[in-house]
Length: 377
Ligand code: SF4
Ligand code: SF4
Image 1 (cartoon, helix red, strand yellow):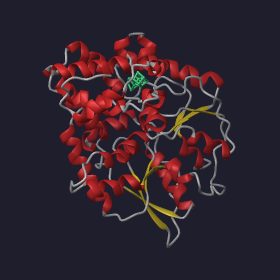
Image 2 (spheres, helix red, strand yellow; image 1 turned 120 degrees about the vertical axis):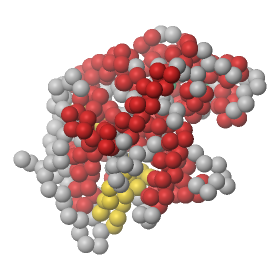
Image 3 (cartoon, helix red, strand yellow; image 1 turned 90 degrees about the horizontal axis):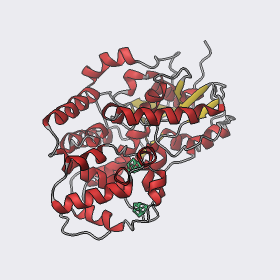
Image 4 (cartoon, rainbow, N blue to C red; image 1 turned 30 degrees about the vertical axis):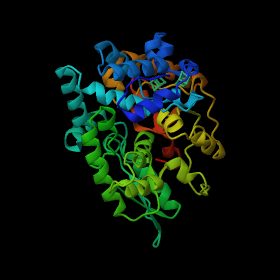
């Protein structure tokens, strides 16, 4: 795409890579639902381009950008390597200044609520998904230490996930140190265009996590894992945090990456007929499509193929709060596809998807690692 006088170098570079081919349209969830070019990746790239050229975003452009889930399905499809996710973040930062005051207030309130445990935990008590099960396994003396990213909402909503991971890792000879709940990765701030607040959290995390001096940093929420892996690209060479961010991102792994080459034969597995939902942040963001499925199959599970498994479930961070109608339609479609094989349980790899798919659905939804820490009642 040709550009004219776009001051932002990165945006200019990304937009120029787009060759208008339109391959991305077929895999964009909002284009599939709404059928409008302006709600497709190519349309949004054009909107961002013309808005940056004019140095102005209309309210209509803001509407179409807000409808984007940032699922990055378009990146997976794009043959030209257009980094759509980075472009939409640049566009949104610019848009933020143009928003009406009431929208800014709503976004600020949601952001603070989700990232302040003191505010969120009481709500978490009401909306809680599951509690801790069973006793924690004590790791053997001399075990290797790993850092487990506890997450900000996960410990309040589904504490069993981190508890199960600690049990699994202890059985494999690792001592998992869980980060305190207040250490949010910064994704909520960043996705709501609060760059300054995100950076404060990112820098504080980098300093805090480096002090643990571990070889591996493990994430069980694919959205948080993606964000921490992205820390490395957020600082320019020469910045005092550049090298430190490379180290943190380089050590960060999704729990599936950590477990894939381990001997899992000693774990107690929960037998179940399952359907697996792969989060966008795992398949399109972290580019780990198929990894959890292959581990589950090696363990003897037979998750049935899910139609349109590349499409977002509609959770997408705070999308379900700000775009409830579209989010609900995507969830209905996703659940229809996940339940087509009549499973006893749905498993996934991100707390946001888990909570979203559990709401108004009678089939239990769990994190897939919970299957590996079966504790008979
Ligand atoms: S990130 Fe997702 S919703 Fe947004 S344009 Fe790309 S495919 Fe569509
Ligand atoms: S697939 Fe890539 S190059 Fe083609 S229109 Fe979409 S973003 Fe542009």
